[in-house]
Image (tube, rainbow, N blue to C red; front, side, top):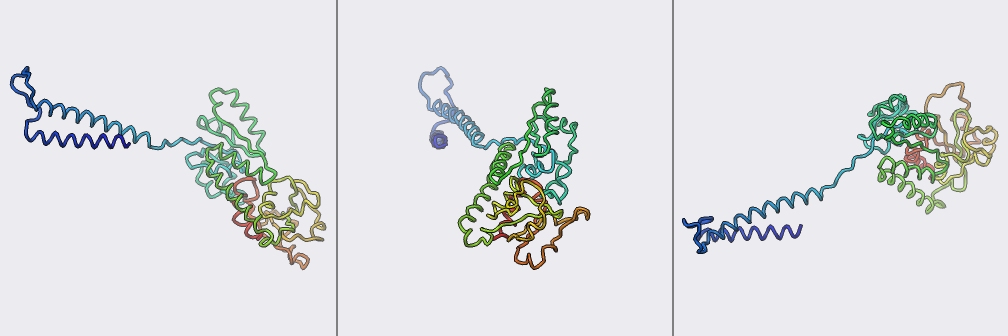
Length: 339
């Protein structure tokens, strides 16, 4: 660009010199005898004019090409289609509006879908094979952890249909720890080509963990104590699940592990009533539950035996799926409440 500016300055000064010369001699005028060998000033002025306009056109062309080269090229992001509730949460949390082809009907239900507000702006599908076939070429199809059978069917169908096999499939794994959930977040971000959005969330989580480690002995009254997650049916959650992410983020032990509970299961009430935890997390108490399944209510935890225990009602939509909703909710509500 510096060279172009220098060239333009030279042309302007040359044009001014030509104009001054033109005041003393007619521009582009020649004597009647065109074969006269005597030099005439008009010839030089005419050549200067021609060179000036020729180089000016070249200069403008170079400026235009330079502007085109400096203009950032916007890469077209891939289209994405999510098969079920847990896949929907990733797409709705990170994908641009123009990327989303469709989400499942489950995404609309605010009781289970953390991103339900945005889901109402999307096209809804019925998870049929016909709808998948009609998706645009090169669409990326995302399936939740419990949709392996449907995903396998789609894979077999696309494999035997050359015109349709441009679609790419990703089946989400179910993380068993906070680190696995963060790794999955990064993987999905790269897959839908939104790495910056997912990395921002990962950075928030790692920053929160660093702060807890720095101030845990001062600000965390539950640091050396345990929390217990309870459901209305009396169930709880032990080790080896993505709910461990909540306990890790709150720097709190899972009391259900003391009873050797693995995965999602149930505890005998005598187990945890005899030794109440420092913190109760009440999951799925925030919406109507069938009376036949209701064995526990928050009022059951108001006895003097539990008076020293803190209680926090969890948002069911945040803990239904392992995904960005769980991380966002933990950072905004669970971690601050525990400290």
